Image (cartoon, rainbow, N blue to C red; front, side, top):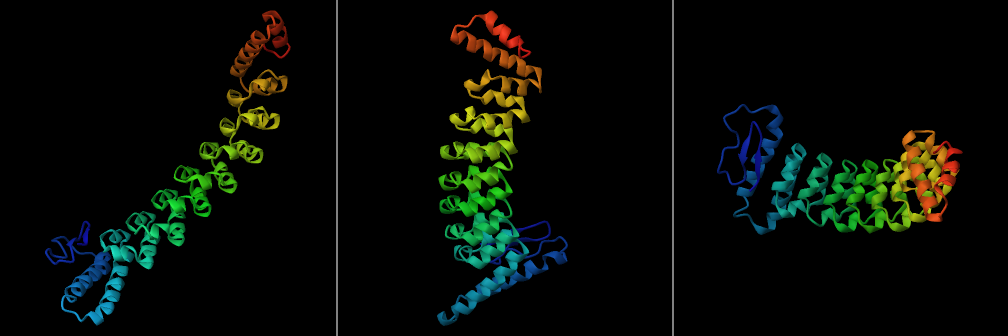
Length: 283
């Protein structure tokens, strides 16, 4: 049973058990949908004794009227038969009205690339309604990621290991790297690109890259807070000390603590460590 309700029309439509129009005023904006509904009711009532050889003609008539209803409101896809929810043209028509219509499409059409692109081009969240096969499709996921890097949360392993997908995502936020494969987190080119766009991307870099002088300096020059992820070998390096302490005095405290820890680990006396620190403006 196809049910449609709005502020001006209350329809329990195809069985004829309720009136098509309630007591409120009918507006011109509902006329197309109302005409399609009336046509569908009459069409289905006429099929009870129809010659089987003419059923195809009736079917085409129902599809045509359903198209009119869906063109007026994509939500009508929810109330049509499963056969019509598996009709590619009808589903595309509904999805062009709203990506949310994908939620009423058949499983077969949730694996259709054209339907998928039409949906994710509108909203990245449509990726969550697609089949696993398309969640693992790099081209589909890339289109969704262009809408938001957060689409990666719904992507499967293939796109998360695809460099082009991650390059696009990290243009928007370094946080995208939390979904990247371990191999891509160790990719210096990708990580440098990501850190240039967002210094916080350094957080997700592979351990070896946290000791990469160029990469770390790119991050530190944006914000001294990147020091939180720097490899121990760079924490007492004068170059990084100078860069970070240009920005904020809290950085001085962190570097002083790092030097003291390094001195304690190497058996160097506190006074010697202090003299070295004062040479950098750190006591």
